[in-house]
Amino acid sequence: MRVKLLIATVDIVYAKLISDNISEHHKNTIDVSICSALEGLKETLSKRKYNVALIDMEMMEHIDTCSIHLPMLLWSENDDADALPSDFERINKHQRISTIVSTILERYSRVSESRHGLESEQTGITAVWSPAGGVGKTTVALAYALSNASDGKEVFYLNLENFSSVPGFLNESGKSISSVFEMLENNDGNVRMLIQGISCCDAGITYLCGPDNFDDMCILSTENIQELITVCSEMTDELVVDLSCIYDIRARKAFDIAKKIIIVTDSSAAAEIKLAQFLSQNNVYESIKEKVVFVFNKGAEIKPYKGAAVSFPYIQSNDAIDIYKRLSEDGWVESQNDL
Image 1 (cartoon, rainbow, N blue to C red):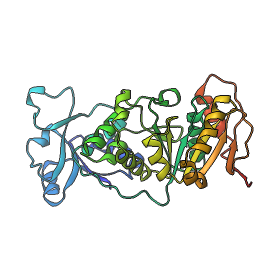
Image 2 (image 1 turned 90 degrees about the vertical axis):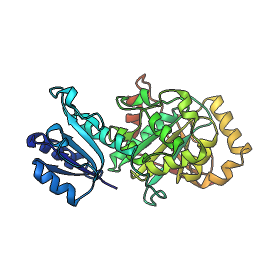
Image 3 (image 1 turned 180 degrees about the horizontal axis):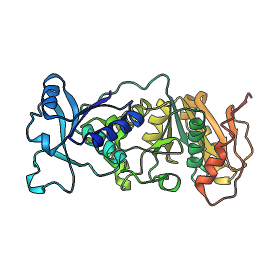
Image 4 (image 1 turned 90 degrees about the horizontal axis):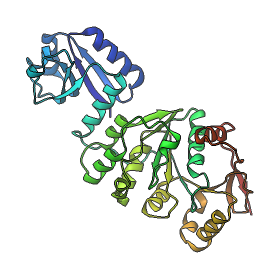
């Protein structure tokens, strides 16, 4: 679904600037039209409906907005605040175009219907998990994501850790994923549209910033997890889901949906013991083993587990970003252990 956006302003230079930017960077999300004359605007609205319209003061007070799902007043600090209509949402015209687009999508997501189906058969959904903390799970997840992005794929990284690692690896300048959790819990609004509006991009990886607090993550039900993964998978070629190092409802649901499961370990005694327990004591492994790829990180020796395996060297660096980027440089090479 593309949002039908109308920009109605007498400032044609400004309207064209926004329109050109949207057409270049958001053409798969927004279908934009321009109207710079009042009579032309009235005629346009009599013939066509719009999801969102940005309308300046000179036009807003003379038109009927019934054919616009979300009319928004396009204003600036130079406008008379007392004369601004109070019953319309407002958007400041003098800000970054990316911020305007994000605001449009976020606000429209709250008044539009949620539309999504089953995840695309073409989308790769990869869950990344470890039974032990500190083995470099998020580093591996991002190295895998970046490797796919380097191959020309659209990649979405979804962090579902109880305590998010996103701030240590990616730029957290966007809005929190907490608003997505809230919409999922209330089952109210268009989740996909909201995610499109607040998602960020770094090094070719699309992602959402971490939650405002730990409790926000705790509200998610199994159904919420399934919907979140499904919606994100529809937006990309490869979805990478980074899970906490516990085996809970999030992990179980992600394992069910995923087409590949990356299990990360290293040579530490704790990691080896916990992985051995998972493989031998948890009957879940039997149901997922055909999808599992083991990653032996930090120079760990590849152990004879049946299935695909990847070995990563130990990189001495205090820069987490540098580590995952260096690990991704040679691509993702899986070897098969046929025992």
